[in-house]
Length: 46
Image 1 (cartoon, rainbow, N blue to C red):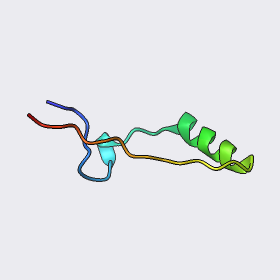
Image 2: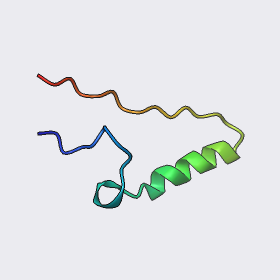
Image 3: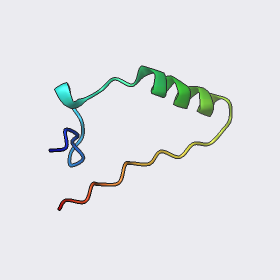
């Protein structure tokens, strides 16, 4: 079984605090660059 939740917003125990990733995004935007954020594609169920 897939341990990741792709159906709803991650909250509580399902939320992982991405401090390093957030800093990288903010620094990129502050530097005048554009960025595109994409969600992962859902897994195909058999």
